[in-house]
Length: 210
Image 1 (tube, helix red, strand yellow):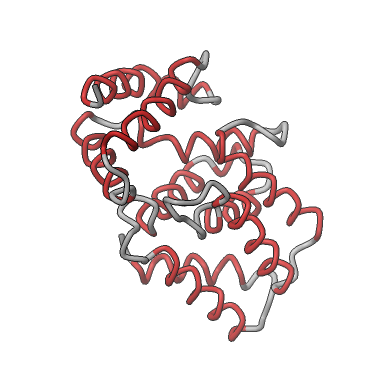
Image 2 (cartoon, rainbow, N blue to C red):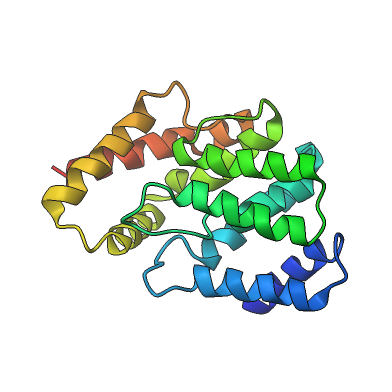
């Protein structure tokens, strides 16, 4: 993860809508502060960078790239293991900041809904942008087993306040929810790339949680 590249990415995006560099830097400081919290072992700036890279790779197929990029930046800005309102709080904070830098209300509303859609990984805006955002977010599930093992260790570290007898049933419920879906991914290219491996990884993790 390269913090200088990420900072430049943020500046290039935000400066399209505001020339208030103090405000843009203030938001960047908040982004850094939140994603760099010591409890963030997976939901951190490395995760954001991965999603931004995927967005750029798929930019020709995305309807409103800036809306997707802002959604990526803010979708996990609030993240506490003890809360079930992280997405709502993240969307609220995004709305506050994006109003200040001058985004159109219609785009802010789209970003708000896109962030909320990551709560249950269900499409709320019926366009390809929502499907891509969710696929970017879940791409880790379809990586190699070695990469996936690192991911699940980091997720467990984020929830270290919970003992196994509390954490494991909750994690099993989440994983089984994904397996019951017809497809984990919405776009064919992601289904082709990751669907089979993701299901294998999830089944392996379920064995480990027994």
